[in-house]
Image 1 (tube, rainbow, N blue to C red):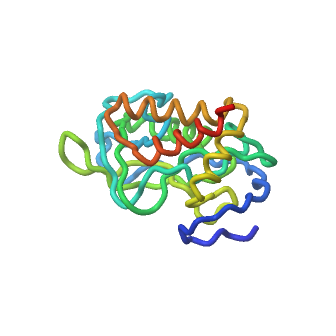
Image 2 (cartoon, rainbow, N blue to C red; image 1 turned 90 degrees about the vertical axis):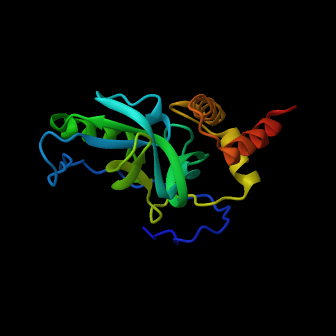
Image 3 (cartoon, rainbow, N blue to C red; image 1 turned 45 degrees about the vertical axis):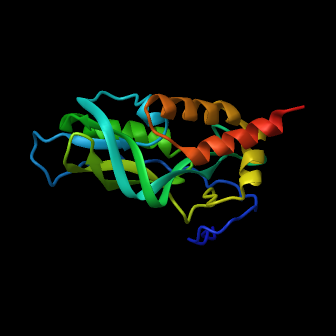
Length: 211
């Protein structure tokens, strides 16, 4: 399949069909750390309020060089290949406030296997270890899922009206796309994480829903 260019220029083209999902190998665990040290996972979307795995500690955190954006076409949970929706991804540039979870080292393989199944349905996300600054002090390396710019479902920076139109009309297995946007903003507000661009996107989507 042809790769998407790595630029962030505005695009409106509809993406091609998603690739066939291949069997997933069991994740390799972190080896370069003491056995008693926790393993960290960084969440920037629904993982923040719905992790779905056991953890020792959760705390506010910041990663630099990446930002939260509706930059991924959804062909499954909030849209279809024929009428894609948009969902969050972690894209290059800027910074992103989120939640870091410390997990027991013995749970790492199981947690990563669970997250791979949850986040990589069509392999549009790549699991990477990022430098994350903890609110309590210190920097750790944390697993997270970033948007793969070479994947056909990478949307990049779409024109605001086009992005709003995709979200307004997207529906998938997880329900309507506008519901996902509203839920995301509600939780970010509750966590004290201001996201002006997402509020402006929500306003556009709401206007499209008016009679």
